[in-house]
Image (cartoon, rainbow, N blue to C red):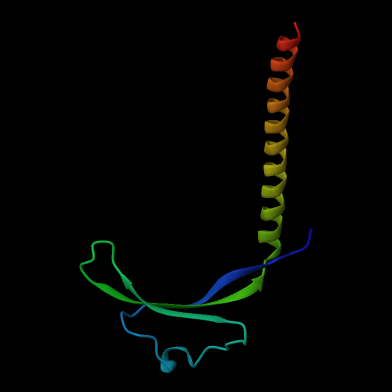
Length: 99
């Protein structure tokens, strides 16, 4: 398997004000960066606020890659065990039907 690109936050807008150019002009933005700026209501609908962030697709680090490979290995092992358990149940069911 090869490394993949993951969406990564490169900027998070903290103030409760709409995002302005002056907030991000210091950033080295790239063509494919995604800029989100939206009004969000809070859970109680009492008041909302502006939320903004910028994300970029970044290749995963060696550590992230190793963790993902370990997770994939564990999931594959778990899936194999589940299939085997299903097989044993089906085998027992159909063996009992033949008798």
